[in-house]
Length: 117
Image 1 (cartoon, rainbow, N blue to C red):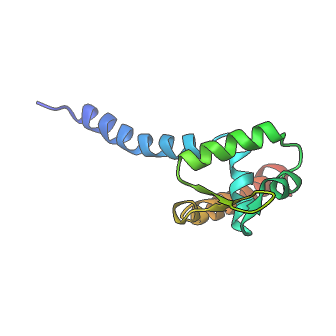
Image 2: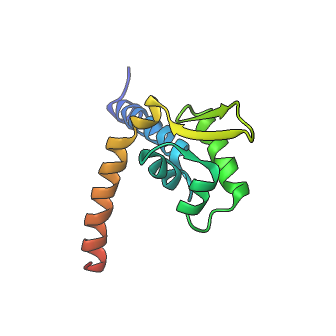
């Protein structure tokens, strides 16, 4: 016989796991700023480095690779001299827009509530 307590724990774990998975993908200091920068349009590496203050080239490169591995960012290499590399959000990356908007709204409300600003 399955106990109610076991069902509640199973239901809770079922709710937590997808949230953890999502946070794993966007976790960190730089991933959301990169995603937000790309929502404003396709960017070259140098453009993003200028738009995201304090990020090092090494960290930007690492985070872009992670976002590309998670299919949120697309890297396009143009056959030109010199070679041009451009980054853009994939359709899957664009699907984060409502999540980012909700986080922005909640963060604004939280700041007002806690800090009175």
